Image 1: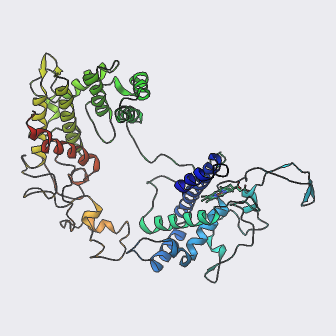
Image 2 (image 1 turned 90 degrees about the horizontal axis):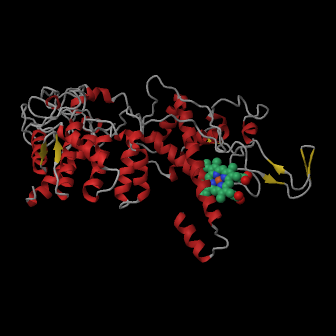
Image 3 (image 1 turned 120 degrees about the horizontal axis):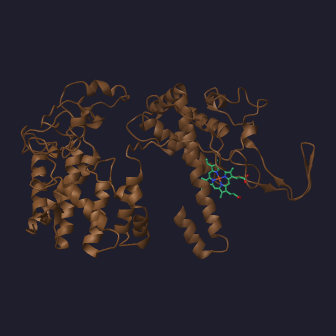
Length: 483
Ligand code: HEM
């Protein structure tokens, strides 16, 4: 749609102005997504309505394919849910201001030409004189004999008259298909102990107040530093991001000595990336990041004054999580940083300074290699923590897709709670996630291949992604004999 608007602007710039195109984009996106969010919140609050909507989709569409726009006509209950959402939570509770073009009389009131007219549709759509139990969510109110009624009572969510929304059809279809697909594909829930806050936000658009779902224990400062460091790199040295790092780095954690790099805490990674700017380009203000990167790296290097033996298991695996869950993330992230740092040091002809000793890049690469070897099977348990690699690897992953039968073997729906039967079955996975790396051994190199031991058997992207970088290094750069 954006593309065709812009090409129309080229041929007819007077009619297709920037303001006009912006109006279509802005008017068409937030409105539909906000309505979908309200519909989701309403269904979450009314499980019986959710059940009916799902049963209807199951009966008319099934689970073998995704619901499509052409299915909506056969989903009257879902259409009613959408209508009831438009009624209860119009995204613009007060219509945009209009102006009377000539003198007129409305409901006995004289309205002179030029008067600004504001319509409170929120009040109209909850008017007890018009709607039975107006504040209640009752999708059935639009259903007569199983068919959706044409609404006679006023629903003005899309405005009224000549300037009413020209995107009404598209808006209704967008919300209906998005909602239907979400109901069909997901089991929804709010976290334990949480409730949905249906309070309406104060803004022109009627927003559902949402709480952050990304629960970052370390706060978001490290992510800001991480993002600024990457944007600086990705924009090939755009000064704006570097100025941001220089001005805010210390508040964002640049001064802390941190020894873990995990899904939650990105400081060590950000510092190594920023150290690159100092090592390769001598960028002022980034010396600090080289010093901090040295201190992170040196704690891992045996034989240096700052080496921390507690960082390793007896069998030689990095053990920064103190043996807690998903310890493998510390191994793969540290391995990745050892290699990235070795590359930066090598290209600038320097070493890591560990107390009184200089540590050359090749030593860091050798250290990283030992970690990768451990992960792939050279360890006391003689187990490869990469599924499908070697003779012995985890067979019972804490992973729904791996442990449940495929849709071919079991075409019927498997509800959220029904997954527990597979979780506790004790059987090997029917679907082998070849290549996935799991949470790994404990602080004493022990490993229990049990789905319930999720800290050990869950394969997470934050474990796997850094290892891909390390494996690529050993498959490419290292083979060229540079180290
Ligand atoms: C849930 C979806 C939507 C809702 C609730 C909604 C609601 C509204 C409302 C209340 C107005 C103001 C009407 C008035 O002035 O009285 C409006 C105007 C407008 N809407 Fe929508 N809209 C939706 C979706 C869309 C879509 C998908 C598009 C286009 C892709 C669109 C494009 C527009 C435009 C261009 C106007 C300005 C019309 C004018 O000023 O003449 N809307 N919309």
